[in-house]
Length: 163
Length: 341
Image 1 (tube, rainbow over the protein chains, first blue to last red):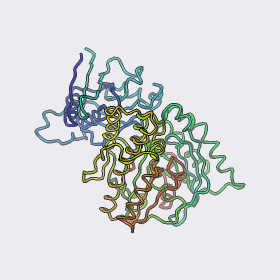
Image 2: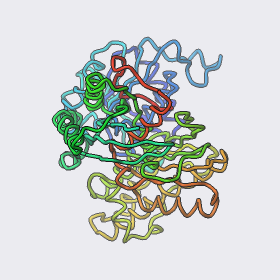
Image 3: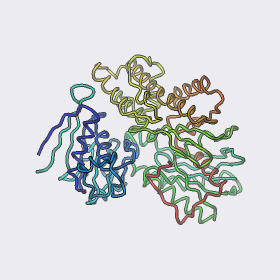
Image 4: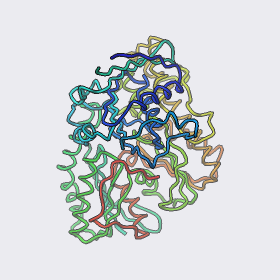
């Protein structure tokens, strides 16, 4: 199942991330691909916000992996009565943000504990540069390809889910 | 007070001995087993290799360090980096420090890596830190403005919203084919470049907070290369683009620092982190402080203390030890996500 969206602003990226967040139950892997500046980190920032994570989500390139708790204690950002209807499901307890940009060998990510997160039904794992670590990506991963669009602002995202 | 420092959070295995007295610290000895050659071959830090290298290097380093004196110096405390960093690497340092603390019956201090960078400029420095103080920490993984009301009293006043400044250097260096680590490569290329050759954004400069953002700058460099069909293999083009990129990064860092320094009426400014070695940044900060805030004392680290080292960890450890802020060797744990503030 393939779908494509054109995103014209950071606001639209956040809206797109909210839609994705609502579809997550926990246990999913998001395999993000796309070159530098294509919007991968921007998407994960939006996703974290939609899940009510208050931490500032910074690029994990240097530390390779950062995990954030998702839970009842965490109020969704900009919580208001009117936005409660669209509140994403937060059945899971953690969002792990992984960056394979500097990785040359899949095993390197396993040594810092990625395997445990990938197999945890309560964790959603978003992996940037997923194409660099193909063997680590579960078969049922949601694939998201980010591309630069027509001008400096536009991004194309193609989402592939296994039917 | 003599402090043994141990640092293994990322690239370097490092141990050092310092003497701390009356709020001043002096390096007695420092040893670093650098892995940077290994990482240059792989284009970055590889955690498994890093941890393995730490394991084989740490004990020989400690014994070489202490073997430099005919009588082993009396150590008053051991300071170790417990985070943030790569878990497998941090663990090597923490476990070593723990074992030594128990074996020698010496108190143990848990140091945050960023705290080390924060104190790196106080090493071998006659000036002491006067409060309130403001620290700009800039490295591959961090870009933060931290306000200090006293030793150990930190408040985060600004940070990057996305990429660290060092990451911006690394990633743009990669786009230009300049190699790893990117900071020194871009700085070197920039020496013969024109900083006004390419118009690049100054992200967040017009916002009233003290936060940074370098992700957009990275993308702007990419689009500049693509839209202008820049032949980055041409050394002059790479030099011009490097100079333009570096100036954009430095402009934002300096402007936000000066604004925060004015707002919090600071008495001392501290610079730290890998990007603190950048000459353009050092010169720009010095010039702006001299012009706008000449009364503020500036502490800038010697270049050898800008890369990861154990002297700075021992230095931070000294200020904890002076307040008897110790941790039980049975309780200390490596914490890869430890945020100082």
